[in-house]
Length: 79
Image (tube, rainbow, N blue to C red; front, top):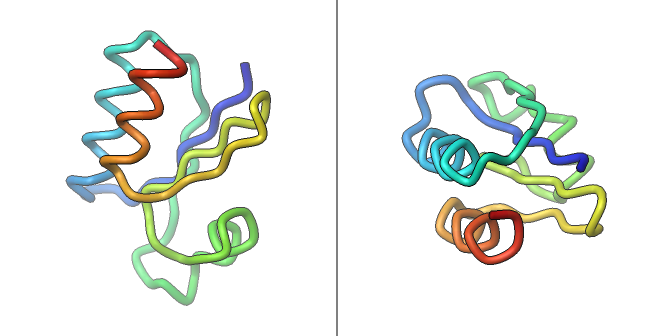
């Protein structure tokens, strides 16, 4: 499985997703992003926007933002 989470240190929404992934036992890579939106070129490249969290599930061809949507996806699809 190839799952990647783009997150900002100290972001409560990112922490919610991180906890959901851990609770579900999902193996994933963490990509830490810069605090300035202008520094988030990689996030923009993969998701079309600069906000975090962003989850990329390469195996299923899914890229998504918004922590509530990501948590629901993790619980329904990856758990």
